[in-house]
Image (cartoon, rainbow over all chains, first blue to last red; front, side, top):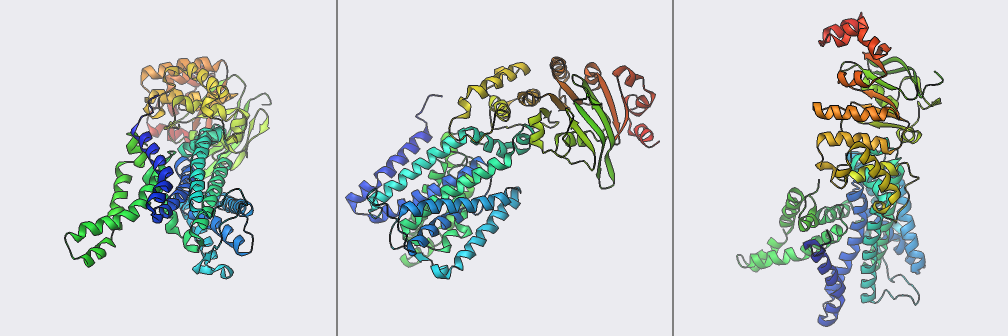
Length: 332
Length: 259
């Protein structure tokens, strides 16, 4: 039990160490792309971690979680556009608006179960997506450029890419820790109990709805923060961020990495997004040994044909995701 | 009637054309172990559902300690001290045995909007839970994953979950379901101990157990109470004998119910 040197812990520690060293590597090699990629991975890992709180621990399969990424991003983008550059205003607004939206979506969707819950969260996501498309003042479906990163006075300078990277990493680690505390607290026991057996929870005296709703709101707020980071990172926000396929990506990260595990969403985000970059290159290299270089480029466009079955294998044979494989346990 | 811990008056529930509860009236005084028997389809589960709040009755009143609880949601009835066990084991399979019971303790230890401290490190949740596990004879299985317990152990844990809410009254929905003779005997022994402390409404098919435990027995046929009396009187009741005890085939029961 006290043995900490498990494969999972080694991988997680290695991953965190790697993430901590990315800026150093970039400083030496000048490979700025790697910094951009991993900043994005870290931000989406925060979003996936927030989704894991409701999806993994709470059993609430939200098919509209990317909406909070968009809402958080738009909060930053719109405030910046309207002349409010201070992060002290932007970020709390991003979190608050996301929480408020989650409260509305959750209040209605949590009265339903299963497929109906999925459909209602998806419907709300589509509603907000088209609302974003209709925002003529803020670029409609072309999106909105965020010219200046959030200003935090002398506290931190987000325009410095290394500073921004480490801030994102810090928030990721903080989010993982927060979720870990939450799920082991009384509150978390109730949320997990409701996932496992809601009927029994009510029978032993828990009004589960209010706890699940609170959980849903916390997850939305955390994802809204990730959205604020994302808008700062890309300097751009558009309705595409909220598209339902983005919500699907977040679900894939959580399921791939391992539902209801602390580091699963991070592992899933790294795996998915690195594979998205690597697979086309690998396939092109492999194919170029067989066919003409131009044809190899064509073949590489079908990299998702490889990613799809990989995901399928994990879902079918490793129900605890990659985290479960590393732990050597099978959940459920 | 006023002294009854649980009083039901004219409880009626229809599902389409089927009358599952047909004007049921019962009064269970504190300390009584009251058994409800009846053939399959007699409406026992529908009755339990209405008592726990999962099914809303069409007519009638349910009072607990004199208070009208007919419209109260499930969790509030639990808060008043009305606990239930499930006919089909209904537990948190991915938690440990102790986690299961501790959660039931937590339900009655103030609100759970506590976000930081580990619930598994709270003695005020774990210790009462351990005590209840010891009471039902599951102390040695405390740290086992619930899914790994045997059927008999699940049934014991069912009772433990209900007990952990520190109820005034237990609604036991077929606690012996699926048990072997040895396990049943052990359950009867446990219920004998419990009955000195709690008021119990017991729904059970195992007649041996029912007659060994019950102070009073109500016989339900097609949603209607056909007899409610002491075990000896029920045994002697010609209508009940004809309908139920002596005639296992469905025909005889039907004749009594409609004739």
